[in-house]
Length: 460
Image 1: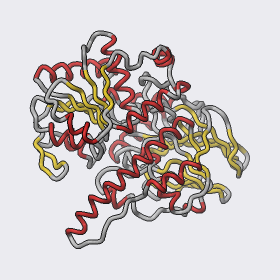
Image 2 (image 1 turned 90 degrees about the horizontal axis):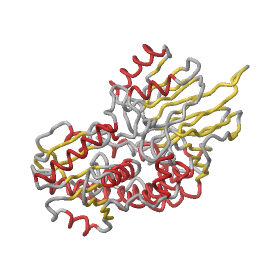
Image 3 (image 1 turned 90 degrees about the vertical axis):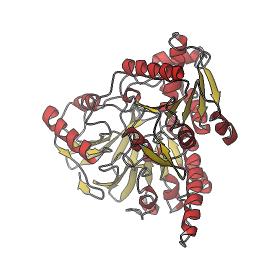
Image 4 (image 1 turned 30 degrees about the horizontal axis):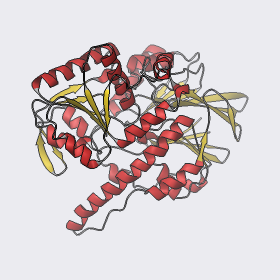
């Protein structure tokens, strides 16, 4: 079996892995690249022919694992897109949203290009391309084995990262015995709100392993919640607002769940939370439609229809309503996308509030290198937002205990659950993180590790 690494190598975005087995060709994940240089990288020619692919497996709905699907379909893919039911429902929202962002970005880049005497820029894909993706989905449950052909069988295991997230287990016959390769997807940490903890397969010969937080540990969730409460109270006492850049899928639902519990417990009073993301609102509805993915605590709470009854939660629909929030000078929490501040309505809120010392920006997720969020977290004195240079005067909080990703300890714990000594291919981490994580794996577990380059091919 041939394994080729097409993305997610020495970076936390653009995950994409190619497999060929007895002339059967398919992908695991098809992610957009996000961050510096993304426009050019996402437009480069594919290292595969979409028409020759029979399947694409998607481990979860985040666009760095799925956002290239419409372009692949537009360029000839006619096979099946295999994923879980919850992931399919989330992707239907996210891919249309991504198409709208592609259109908006192309219009802005075209205006810039025309002023420089250059040709116009076309969107990476459009809503029409997304429409052609939807009929190709083939949803499968967790923990059930399915046959793929060419001596391959597979099953999804709960990865505990976001709703519907999965690890993919592939079995294939190699000479005299069956072999197994696991694609971890993004592994969640234990105790994530709402969803269940990650499943650990008992054995594997090979593992393609994410390493987003492979060189660090998260704060305990309780400490992070305490820090969030302090940030909100301090900001309100100063007469400002709290702005939380958040991914529409996963992190936002966790935050609403936590904020609701804080009000129910009496730690916060009469707080007004504005969810300024139509996508996040729709994704929250998808969450509520998939209780089969919930842990016991969430099932008990949500079955009582008490998810948001304690919280003054406002859904912000129109652009005009979003703009009006910036006329409210104190006492509100605004949760808006995108999580790394690379698009969405959060950029407008930062433009109008990042220079205000009484306000706070609370980062609750990973900030990729080259993103606006990363520049703010790294304490830039000013940043360029929507054509203006904006001073960074607001208080900046980075609370990594809310991350839906497992940290180094939890990743090692997940790997240590394997009863044999698999070879591990380390992906989906920044270069220095992958290297450090590889050393930890060898030192603590004794597994053979590889850090693939983009385009590198292995025969398994």
